[in-house]
Length: 412
Image (cartoon, rainbow, N blue to C red; front, side, top):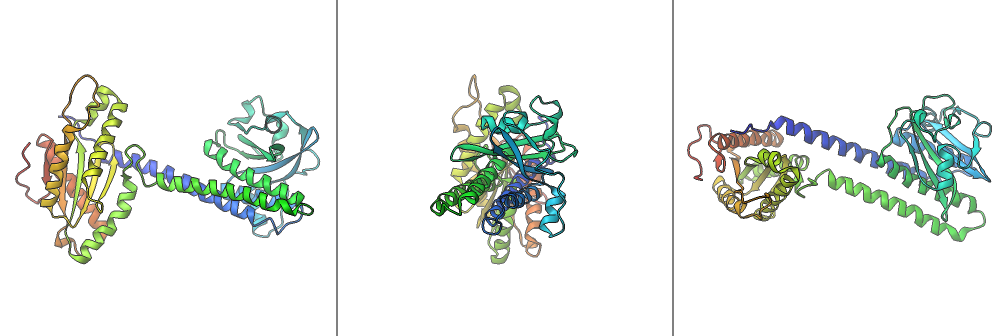
């Protein structure tokens, strides 16, 4: 008998994936806040340096960065226009006295093409340094924090009409802190900041260009909103199968439970587990296993009714919540699924293999009427899992309805 997958291990993996998606989503919302804060600055500050300083404060606080700065091109040199760290930005936002780490007009000038920021300016390409002190591009004078520890650095060109006129820099004391997400997010912020700085320079005598600059900012916001919608989608959908994921199921299912409790309508939960799936992965590889999961997911989705909930719990396990359905109706549905599985297109190399699954079925009963919907869902899931385990112990490829003293199983 093959060992049964530990549901706690699956839960831990799913929770880790959900935690990562949540972190990305929170970071995206923070970037939207920074962009909106940037837009709010356009009519409140007249000095270019003050505008850049306030913009950097928004970026540092919302993205939890150690230090950020803006360098503008002056001939063949780059000069520091503004720079701020997390503590300074918080003090500024709270209205406390702001203390600069360094004088931007003195030490912070260097040649275009020299160092990480100089390369970003000369090549027009974003530069990411994972470990500054070990990277040939990094120069010691690029530490804008005046002696503060710097581990990783990101330098993003600022463009106006295709021409690089400055660089946005972000540093962090941890090595390897920045990733592809930071590159995309800071590129969006840099595009918006570049447009705002250019508009600020020209607004006194070029009013006709204001609309074009505003359109560019709106495009940056639309891209950020598109990313937000993408991350919202990923947080609720299993990317491999296209079904809803565990997080979505356990957030939406309590509402269906509550409706059934209130109306006294029947409700049945089914847990589905593909038989001998580990053998498929071990023998034919994970690519084959993934194709198998996709086929099973498609069979489940097309067999269910429109109002039923279907999700992938993780691994080879799926879960169904059937509204207005007695156990007998769930059994009929399960039999239709069992009949479809062997007929799915062959994905196992080297010959046919009969695809089967086991099903644990449990129904909402009157004794659960007064329990909180979330507790009822947890109880139903635990009972369906017990019924599923009975199927596995009895030889797989069958269904079982949870009973205190279960008797009888579906024939093979």
